[in-house]
Amino acid sequence: MKTDQIIEKLTVMPLYVAAVLLPSFFLPITTEWLEWNKHYLLGILVVISLLAWLGRGLVNKKLVLVRSPLDLPLVALWIVMLVAAILAKDRIVAFFGPADNVSWSFLALTFYLLAVF
Image (cartoon, rainbow, N blue to C red; front, top):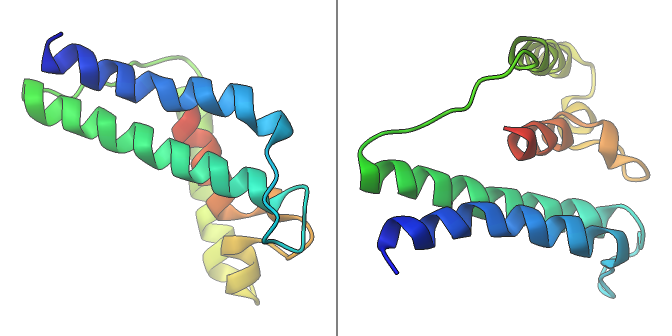
């Protein structure tokens, strides 16, 4: 198997693993048993996929970004959330989310958008 094919599989496999594991993933070491665990898993798998995509771009000496009609609105949403997080009174909560609901944080939105792209 060629290096490019291995890296291509490494780019896609973490997202497949996330789709399978996220509904039933729990960690015994956290006090919040429902949401934090899934965000940790999604963040780790998205970073692995992103690094594999960047590695594939370095191997091929060309980064390929597939464009879609939703790119502009999603990037605009990300920019609005970034500005809102920077201008917020409590920046820590804006960037990382409150302890009971991290899905509305800037970091969570960033991982969601990286998984989409």
